[in-house]
Image (cartoon, rainbow, N blue to C red; front, side, top):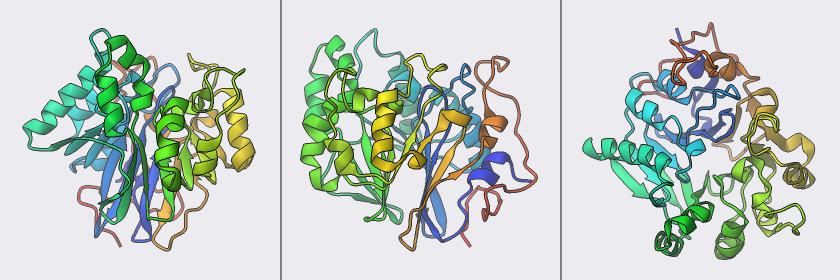
Length: 352
């Protein structure tokens, strides 16, 4: 019998080219990508986090349930901060990761606790003969299965420049060296921007990729923080990046402000998103602890998201009773609750 992860998230059939799943993980980010590749889907996980305080999803357990005996094709880390890497150690113990892609940022001593988790996972992948790749910005997208992947940041010169700095400076500029990626069909794109800040967009991305910025769906950088637009509320906002991306939908990965130690998402940033796309097209995972699913279909459409209405948080949500952030045992579902999804074993998925 299928488990909750499979019934809620399993790619349905040949009509879906890319499925992007923005998981509710509290104060952090974690996005599953299902990428059609002939008669199967490649599965990528972009970042991971565990947040007991805000009842975030236990990502390693969910991914294990989802994949069963199959490998995770890739883990992508946008930057080595703990709210984008917490849980990677558990994930690498529970599932086989075929490849790791990352930003190339190397924190100095006293700033490298989260990076050590990444280093350990990369060593495991390399020992099994898998790939470890530094993602660098390019004018040309690459093919991943039947989709296109476009890396907008960080540029090679940014990586070299920041990694030559003193540890304190490298730490301060980590968001400037964040991976910003788009995945799509060449017309419809979904952008995942990690914690990339105004500095990254204004100095590098918006200028260098001016003609390549557009995306139908934007994962709001830095959990809906104002740092995408400005450092302080008093500063005039930098709007050229949002106007260049020109999204129809914005998804914000953050808990409620009361649960966030950084008061994410910031009210002024959310107002700017609402003014651009409309209140009804801004989707905040923390409002109801929901996961949002966006599909790019093979017919070229990319409509509003599907919400899981909090079912994944209910099934996989961490609590203070969980031992070492890990919940207990698989949850079993009696059937799919996301419309036309057909539950089936994920192992080596065949598409209808």
